[in-house]
Amino acid sequence: MGILNHALPNIGPVKAVDTAIGWGRKSSIWPMTFGIACCAIEMMAVYAATFDLDRFGAGVPRATPRQSDLIIVPGTVNAKMAVRVKRLYDQMAEPRYVIAMGACVCGGGPYVKWGYNTVKGVHKIIPVDIFVPGCPPRPEALMDGILKLRDQVGRDAVFARREQAGKEMDGRYAAAS
Amino acid sequence: MYAVEEKNDVFTEELKLNLGPQHPSTHGVLRVELKMDGEIITASRCDIGYLHRCAEKIGENVTYLQFTPYTDRMDYLASMNNNLAWSLAVEKLIDVEAPERAQWIRVIVAELNRIASHLIAFGTYGIDIGANTPFFYAFRERESIMALLERPSGARMLYNYIRPGGVGHDVDDQWLADVLAFCDEFERRWKEYNTLLTNSHIFIKRTANIGVIPKDVALAYGCTGPVLRGSGVKWDLRRDVPYLKPYDELEFDVPVGEGTHGSLGDCWDRYWVRMREMMESIRIIRQACPRVPDGPFMDKKTSGMYKTPLKPKPGEAYVRCENPRGELGFYVVSEGGTSPIRCRTRAPSFCNLAVLDVLLPGTMIADGVAIIGSLDIVLGEVDR
Image 1 (cartoon, rainbow over the protein chains, first blue to last red):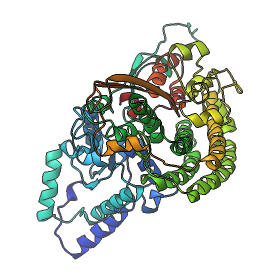
Image 2 (cartoon, chains in turn red, purple):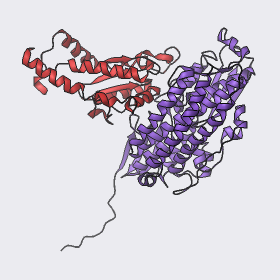
Image 3 (cartoon, each protein chain N blue to C red):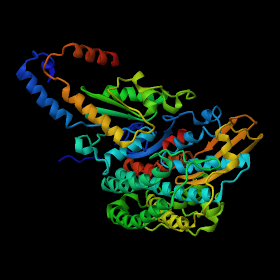
């Protein structure tokens, strides 16, 4: 929506439009097909029939970062992969969201002490919205993370001017790029 | 009218293409550098290391028991089998044998996990080929297996259940009965899979005569598991070198490829070997469940090392096991300390992946995806 983003005053009608857009956006999250390690299998289990992420409108993974707005980082990121994760994140269009899935991605996990090659937490490379700990997290845990992300996406304003919280958001994106 | 002279100087430029590391059908973070002539692959080179997690170095720093969870995370689709191989290696080093009851429980959980692993291979191979439905069917049965394995071990995927000296917790009779009930259920489901994918005309067209590995190439590249058996070599460690006593007493066949729909050793043969192995595992579980004897599930002498770290005598041990993906070997060298000084893994996926560079040149790129899927690699194990 271009130049109107965060340009309008924070008043009733604008808020109402934002709420409607937020409801639509949170109900159609497009995650990216991206598997690294063990957690990817649990992520696949979430997409599959038993847990069925499609109930929340996030069940159709896209094969390219350019079409997706959520990247779930499922598994250990090492030095060689870190560059690629960063590039994938950069290729995604705004607004974009990141879920760090698993202990390795949240802060090193079992490889924190002796893992000479692993990145101790993906938040050192890209900004993370939701952390889902566990090794690997149960599918219920990942779904909880995605539900929390839905709330966050629904609250995000599109047209209305962002106040204090908005500055923090801008700072966050500036740090990423 | 002008006569058009035919010229042979029409050529396509050589294109370098990167497949991966983020690609839906590379089964993890594999990168393949392809040289393309139009749609034909002329040369390929595998680039691995995107999931190198320092497992072997960690093994030299932690104690023998502490390394068991790291073996879970190598081949994360078949954690039980990895635990089993590591436990057997440590047991060989300290010269103990697991109690009878533990051995039978080990067989049951390892075969259950083999089915779960082959289910993933089946489901994701369908997606590679372009059939999305089998994936959902495969994960439905996989959830049942996860629920069964969760009851004794407490974890869904990475169990840390089989430990040096026995198994972590005992199983009860109700669990064994539920496992048998699952076997009946699975047999019916398995027939569904065959109507869904195995005998599908499109699937056969996409996989038969594609990625043919001749017998001698499979042997020369050290392929093991379904990749080797798909090429017609009847070699299964469970039958030929029984590493657990019960395998000697159980009856089961070793399915090999027969070239049903094309040449021997094509993608369809490897796929069909995996499908039939699932049924053989069911057969093993059916025989094993009633025969689980009473007794301790953990060796008394070995369980002492849960309090003080184990210090084996200087020496070395090598144990190999039949994983769902092939022959997994652990080579442990002790110098008398609390942790091994060398802890080497012979990963089946790594050796199976090596043959990819021979298979790819000359094929279309869409078939290349089918070939990668049929090798069924797990990058956690390739890179370790």
